[in-house]
Image 1 (cartoon, rainbow, N blue to C red):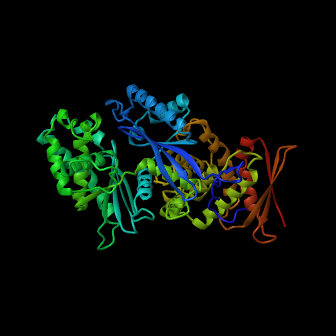
Image 2: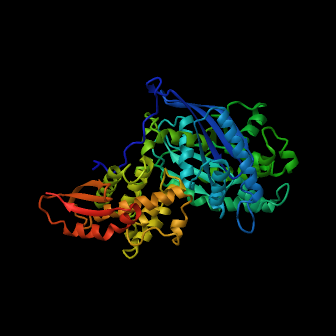
Image 3: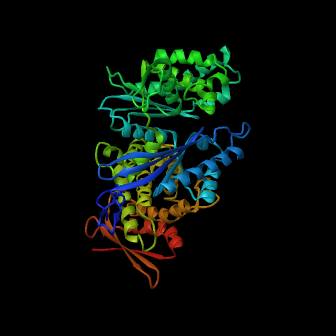
Length: 548
């Protein structure tokens, strides 16, 4: 049995067998499927530092945020544009010999009723997997991106990222973020909903400002509550809207646009002047401004209002540009999960485990009991790997998280608590996971008792793709056995050894009692009750015997 409930590290850096040493350089591509644009960066990672340099960028305006007004669905035209853009990204990445493309989707796909249909279509037509991430997870990866390009020197910084569909606010000083929020105010969203005049009328600009202020008051208050007395954080701005405003400011004040923009600053007073100037311009004039694309000219007024209202609410008089954001954060997260980062970002690598344990505390989980169940689950997983199931480190971690949180539903009520566990895990804001990974963990916890996975269950149907359903089908029976092994919640069983006889498909569980000669009849009874799903799933007969 494993010594710790925390999953073992992922695989080490691959070894080039011809050289007998770890690969020094690796090339990967990261794609951000956003509300307005699809962005890609291709990076070369030096594993000896570790660090990465951007060797190529790709940007395509797919406008996924132009959704159907009646249904909220992604439109066929937007989906077609996205498919063309993603195929172009694939070809560019292949030409640069990228070993992997890591793609994430955010607000537009997250909110569209047919968002998962779009993700499945991309997989079927292009063979590209897109991970859908939550708003807080998007904020966390933006934070990682900023940390990769800017030293915070252990001083508090507020990071703002204004996207097409949402605005992320992060408070951190280089270690764990103190506050992560994602609010449904974005430049594309607000332009579509509130701007009908050109140039924008007095009434519309006033309504837009009031709406943004009202939407951002709560996340700003929550962020400010995490500041210590006397702290005056620096504001960092990322992504297209803020970079465009910086270019406009630089051209107006310096006569040229600096390259790179990283570190460029402008004041709140300067921004207010820009907002007044931009709002009086018709589209035809805005599109002629330096650094202004056609699509950016349509949405820049709403984006500038979001930044101005945020700075006013925060009391920040200046914003500093960071050119690294979500795409680079996806790269950093990939490096963390592949064990390539050992220095100042190392603390971030355990974000999944810490997030699960934080949720366990939030939902008042009996942690010593949950950790025993997790130990049993991982022990069974490890012993049966390659014997009955094919799963690896990623799925092992899902099982651990589900084991820790399987009883979270007691926080609501004992009755049908497995269903409540599903809901709390699904909507509890776990960090470090994609939406489908959270869905998988929640389903594993859901099926630790009562009926097994059924196609008629809504939560099971939410699992997109056969792989995730197979994970739930094959690992939930293991979690059931782990729960049965500590049925009394007293730690009566110290360990379990699995013996599988292929000749008669018999799985024998040899139980080691915590105290020699102890009565483990309740655990034996519970295993008898819980073994049915294991037997049906794997086509085995399960027996349990007490040793010693």
